Image (tube, rainbow, N blue to C red; front, side, top):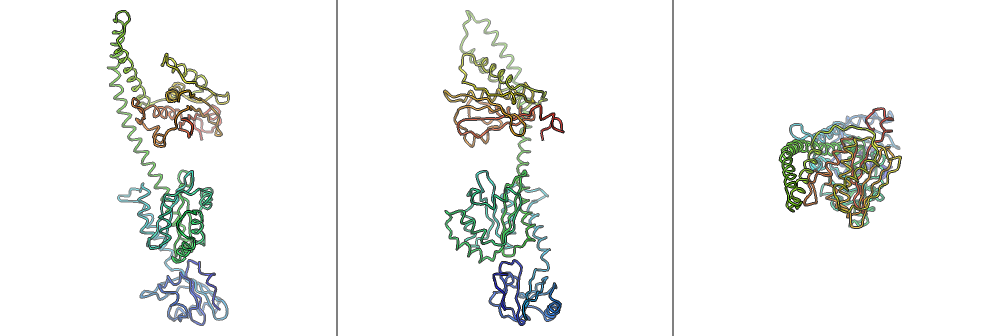
Length: 523
C-alpha cells in the first residue's frame, strides 16, 4: 500500500512512509530535511537513513501501537536529531512524522533575530519602517520565506512591498509588479476581513491564496497556471497573515509563506507585524516631539520678537496721530494712509505671534454660538468699512447653540476662519456657517465658502505655522486657530469638499461635562 501524496504533500513537517523496511514515499519536507532528491529516497532501505538501534526502537514502538521517540537521521555528513511520531498503517506499512528536535530553539532564535532588528546601536529603537523592512530581508531569505506587506488605505489595500528572493522567479516578479498598486477591498476580501476583525489567519493552501490574488488583478501580466506552478516549485504549502495595528486600527497586514512554515512560526510573524506597528508609532511620536521642540523654540523667539516690535510700533502710531492733527485743511498725504495700513498689518502680525506662541489660560464657560457669530460679523464689517461683504448664511439650531468654550478665544478663532472664508470666496459665491450636534454629543461648527478646492499639498500643510500661499500672508492664521481651539479642549479640521473649502471646529457641550464621570474630560 502506498499512501496518497495528496494526503501528506501539504504537510510542513517531514513525513516518511515505510513498507517492508524500505521507504515507499516521502513528501517534499522530508526530502528537504535530508537534503536529497525525492526520487533517491523512494525504495531506499530505511537502514540507510538511521542506525540499527533507532530502527529497533521504532519496531518496539510499533509493537505497542506506535508513539513518540527521538531519532538521528543521516543527512549528508551530519546526522539530524528529530522528534518523531511512529504510526502503524496497514500490514507492514508504518508512517514516520518528524520535526527537528531543536525546532523550539529555532523559533526562539528566529524571534530573537527579528527582535534584534528593532534596536539599532546604543539601544535606540528603530523609527524608519523602510529600514526595518530592508534589514529583515536577510532573515526571510535565509529561511526561504517570502513576505508581503499591505498598507490599509481608505481607498483600498496598497501593496507596500514584497520580501522575496529573486530566484523565486514568477513569485518575485509578481511582487515587483504589484508594488505601489492599490486594490479595492472588493477584490481582496480576506484582507478586508482581517482589517475588520483584527484577527490574523493561517491557511493550508499558499497556492490558492496567491492564485486568488492574481485573479483579483486581471490586468496582471502573469498567467494563473504559471504563478501556481512557481509556488509549488518553491515547496510553499502554507501562508500566515498577521495584522499590524496602529492606534487601534489595522494599518498594515503582513503575509508570509515558506516551505517549512508551521503554525508555531506564527508567533514570529505576529512579532514582525508588531514591530511594524511599533516602528510606525515611534516614528510618528519622534516627528511630533521634534515638531513640538521646534514650536517651543519658535514660541520663545516669537514672544521676544513681538515684545521688541511693540514699543517702536506704539511710537509710530502716536507720531501718525500727531501728524494727522497738524495737517492743514484736513488734507492727508496718501503716504500717511500707507503708513497707517502697514502699521496695522504689523500690529496684527504681533497679535498672531502672541496668540500662537504665548501661554493661554482659557476661562471655560457656556457660550452661545449665535452671539459669537453675530459679534464676529459685526467686527469684520467695522474692520472693512466700505468694502462689500459676501453673503453669509448662518444656520445654528437651538440644540447646537450652546458650547463649552472661552468666549474670547472662540471669537478669535472663529474670526480667523470667517475672515479667511470671506477673503477667498468666488465672485457671486457665499459663505455658510452651520452648527450641528454630532453622534458623540459634541457640536460641529462648520465654516464653508464657495471657492476653488485646496490642492492636496496645500491641504496637508494648511495648519503648518508660516506656510502661506498669499504674498502678503504671515502663514499664522490657521496655526493660531488650531492653537486657540485646542486650548479649549476642542479640535479643528479641514474637511473634504469638492465644491469649496470647509473648516470645522468641534467643541464640547454642557451636557457632556455634566454626564461624564471625569468632569472636564471628554471620553
